[in-house]
View: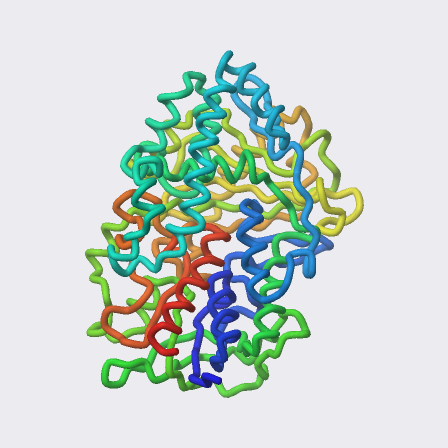
Length: 513
């Protein structure tokens, strides 16, 4: 059995994934986590009877989760219960709301009502998206992105043009549909999570397949159930957890990482599941962990620029400054003293200009004037996340990464703005029932996650930031340093993070098996 010591920095989805695969392969794996619990951006917190998921709130691509747990001889149902949401979500346009049905035939009927004859075009669009999803998820995203030779694959070569890599999602959608609501419905996943549709390869219509056919799901008790399940899998593979460990340096000798220095925080107790092996909260302030291999599952840019000597960085400051970032977010966790009438679990407020907000995120890079926004109300589906008679709300405004001026005054102004719009559309009062509110934005992403430019979703999914054009999953300067997570392959999102951990684990085993 291979007992080389591996230190994984960060216990987010990709860190948990890579650690579990390496533990399964027999390595001696320790995860160092800055916070007092696992999850990274998917942590949770509880206050006044409310439990808030701090980050991801959409559960798409259930097949990716099934595959992940299946590789450890487990099923999703061994850990949590999934329910498909119907409607999948609601959209508020300028004129009227629209529920997006889970049933595909009802979805086609909706398209025909918006644009007569468009259901037949939707069938064509979804057939193409299904091919992209099958090849993209099974082939493209499982490539480590280290060489063009990886893409010498019969399925990839024969389907190159069907994958639509060189066409934009916007042109693909708009060649088929004229109705503006249909266009926005099909373009919103990449606007919120990646880039302008005009700069995103049409390959990413696979996200529409995930939405429309794969469905929108919810794990009972919240998204943190996924984290908890992955922690249990990791422990079963022998992975050790050290919480409250703020990594300060990767120690390099003769071009190799030989250890990791960390500052433990003895004043903060570990609050993760009690079934996990956790660190003694009275450890010395400075801790050193020997390592034969290091995997960075924290922010790639942070590891490069703060934890490594300059001579061992793979990328220059100019390289990082020219990266196109996916959005950051202005978030609010809100508890209401009452239930709201006739709301859905997921709601998108597209009652202002798509084009203007998209430009403000990606082109002019300014605080939005009148933003689109999203609301999750998990208490609609789950009685455990709020006190009886109360509502749990998670509000999200996509904003450009790297903005200055993030302060409480600005956050309060945007909160008032979007709450007022919610009250108009929902035809009921909200603000006077707020009994808990916490905001989270760019400065928090930086302080909590060391996020480059305060990003929330990593790099934008543009053609020039795809596969081998992403930051490499293996250091170019340190022979035993690897990276996983949203700034490397395959990209942002929860399912890609699970896959990223698997891909990088295979690269480690290939090099040091």
